[in-house]
Amino acid sequence: MGQMAHLRNYATIPECEVVAIADLREKTGKLVAERYGVPHVYRDYVEMLDTERLDGVAVIQHFSQHAAMLPNVYRRARNVLTEKPLAVSVSAGEGLVNAAREFGCRHMVAYHKRSDPATMHAKAIVDRWRTSNEMGSLRYIRMFVTMPVGDWGCSGFVGMLNGGDPKPPLNAEPPMTDLAADAHKQYLNIVNNYVHQINLMRFFLGESYHVTYAEKTGVLMAVESRTGVPGVIELEPYRTTREWEETVLIAFANGYVRLRLPTPMAVNRAGEVEVFTDPGGDETPRRTVPSLPWVDAMRQQAINFVRVCKGEMAPPCDAAEGLDDLKVVRQYVDLWTRR
Figure 1 (tube, one colour):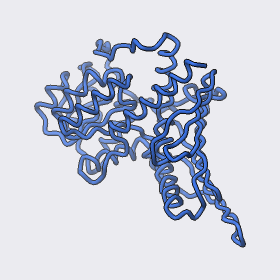
Figure 2 (cartoon, one colour; figure 1 turned 135 degrees about the vertical axis):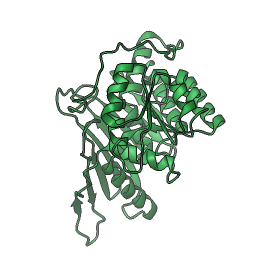
Figure 3 (cartoon, helix red, strand yellow; figure 1 turned 90 degrees about the horizontal axis):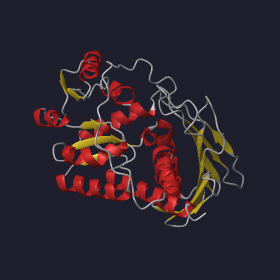
Figure 4 (spheres, helix red, strand yellow; figure 1 turned 45 degrees about the vertical axis):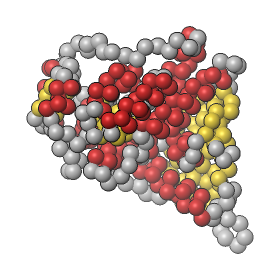
């Protein structure tokens, strides 16, 4: 992910200069640096942070390593990007939020779906309708995804460099001790595979929500927002081997916005948006499909992080909101264990 979803984008953004990378795998690190023209390569990320003057740092590791690594980064960096989720457990996430606040570091959690041009277009319409009430009240949000199977990589890792170095062991967050084995397995499944949808639900609701129902087979999560708007997330209701199918329906009283998102590693391809309006009276119902830029979510996310580093925008999702996602996952699993 570090190479193919992140570095390849930063290396080609005109407003960004990649000056250093840190990789415990020396051979791989040198190969990657040579391809992308990165002048400095380190084995020790702390040495890199202490030596270089950096406006932002992309720390692309498995989320189980965030709790051990990020406090060292926070005290040395002004802006940090990590992959989702924030951490494994709620308690570890709370520790990271407090540490980032203590050291004055802005932590952007890489929920790339928020940066997809289709998502951004849909969100602008939803916010406008909620402000103007032109389509009536927001009534319901439905999310649907066929992951974790399907070809989520979409050939996006073709050309990834590997020098053959073995991956060294890293410090990982210890397993949670307050969940039974089956609940712990389900928690890791949700926090790894479906936390994107959990985060996107809040994005479109525009407010916090809580879990009201966890179907016993694990295929359905029902939620309710702070102001009473219901929503559902359908978790792999059927399996696909090649196709990636993910949709979001945001329903108002007199219309809807439907969003279809591509695989996470799709390149130069945004999602699709369909807008339906039927205000009634003498007005003709309309269904429109806008043409969106040929920019994928990962690239737009990189552009957004550069803007965060320049002080031009706030993180689309910061550590504090990333913590809310972990709390929702825990709510869901606690309900699921009572099935």
